[in-house]
Length: 601
Image (cartoon, rainbow, N blue to C red; front, top):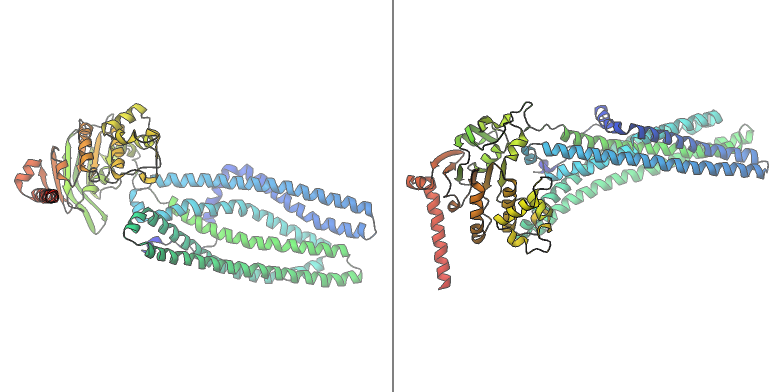
């Protein structure tokens, strides 16, 4: 289970293949990026001007008491600073604009890909991990594009410019200043190795937190009803503490690294003042040049520390991009065929022909299952939990593909039909219907479908959902909370029936659809269900045998095979599995009735 919730750990600090794929997202905005790079180089060049103007001011004007010249050079310095401020503003804005655009494009690509993935992928990957891809990992890539890729050009240009200027001013003093570079290199290498490991721990910890939160917030009612708050709190505390410790380790390395860089920089300034002072005393160097060297030295070590930070950003981006691309490279296993067969009309004839299926290779769920449902026929499927009833519906909807055999729709293998055609022809009403946040009518219409308001209201009236909808303040515009939390189980079920009626499918599937509805509500919707099934192929999975007696045929599933088949009366006369199930439920009903009579007495 821990491995199931863990983030993958990847070892490479830099991967050219991943870098090329990341740069692909910059291509639509290459003009903006080019302008931003130009502005960044201009900012870097302007930063080189300040120390030189300081040298000129000291050597030409302050030294000789030229107030007018000093005023001019100060005014020029101010103009350069203001121009640098304006250029830096536009450069920063353009790069962050580009980063936000790339985040938008990447999230749309990931979400679009997720929608195409097969259902089995979500069986094996926790939702918290997938959410991390769309949120945290994409945010890391935004930092790469806004503060990483382009900024490197500015840092490299700045370092190159400072080296050239310092060598031109005085090559001997420049070499003295550069003598501390090996110390910087050693400190940076140690820092990179430590931060890389701590970063991986942080990413693993945050993914585990996301997965844990998603699972437990979704199941909060179960946690509370079984009084598991303390245990879950303890589990979350362990994950949160691990995340805290990983972050603190990362902070420790930063807290050591930057003061070390400052110390090395101070050492370089000390060397400049010592050696430069000697040259000033000998008359081979001016005071202004020494001051300029000190300022250039301060600017020299800032890009080096920035490049170290860029490495961390790059490391983060490599790890995040590999996880994102692993998701994007996961091929959807259930897709429409390259050359689909598109019939003019779906009649609703279904045939399972020698179907074998297993979620795991060693445990078959369906074993050589064969049956046929004529168009407009009403077929019920009963059996114990785990007998394979719901799997039949998953295969018919092509959430999974069979390992052996065929499923035919109107005589055509469903693998030869477009996915959209299959799923638009089938409407499934589940035992626990899923409602989205939005309005009542949105959940019946499902937003984008061109279903008129009259049809929405008519569907609600037919299943008697209008009874509670009309009592709500905003009626059909009333807000529905996430997963329908603001509605009762029965109300959610009625809305699911209204949704099925509004879509008017050729094939209707009721998967334990009335098991969560009380007896009174069930009686109210029975006539609507009858009308819904008229002239429409219907598959009904139910534990309540009283709800399927009106079906044309009944299949009895047992351990993945069809044990019995026939009408309600025929199966009772056979006195097999169906008869035992019926007797068991009938006995339970009699006992319940006797208890009620005892209480009344």
